[in-house]
Length: 308
Image (cartoon, rainbow, N blue to C red; front, top):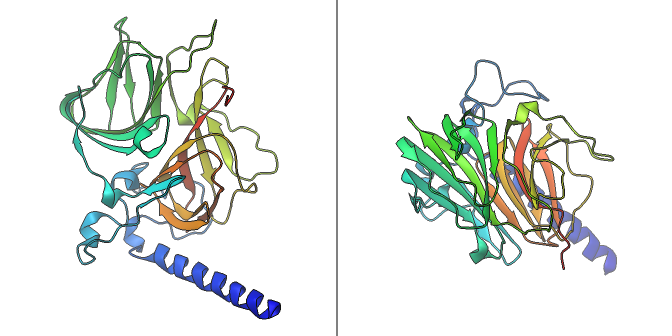
């Protein structure tokens, strides 16, 4: 009887994996921008702009018109998958000519917010609440960031900025741009302060990841003053996390490129560029990259604070 149960369980796992892979292939065609060669580390030359699939996902709403009610979005007590066809945009409070979609917030159990900000012509950001720090990452277009001293920075795709709590600043857009924004109430430590950061992903060194194969970049300083960091993680097709992670940190994730399978708790989800994920503390998590192009995702992680 035990042997029969094991055989049935193995057959079920193979069936579920086959079903997942079929689901992942749904709607994916060559014109969607996949390279013909296997194992490439960058986008195809002369193809679409960097991160174009964040705002033009394969399973966009226009391609789901024949499937009323269909969504890949899932909400659980310890994780959530929010896919582009579920985004609900509305005017962002205190921003002008900007629509926002909140993907993660304390209402779901997180201690931070993550949202997409679509800035239109002649748009301007509003300030975060008092004592709230902000991180901006540009996925489409160009914006101008100006701080209280009048110093301006042009942020293009793959550029980002960290704004310390209570730092007066503005983000302006003359045409149209898309940002992913993280905000959280800063956890102060005596004698430590954070500083504004303006940089881009390609200027960050690839860090050592013992026993892992992915490439890791950290976008913020490792100083104890910072209570979170933003990671950029790159996987080539077929690569996966070695550690099946269970830890006290929270995560907010945005898929920037590629596709794969994400395990969250006891569930397995096909994911692709444009998908967002919230991971609560101690939820089992694991990722494997599939497809023909690299996976790149942006990952929020709280750090440098005692969980007590």
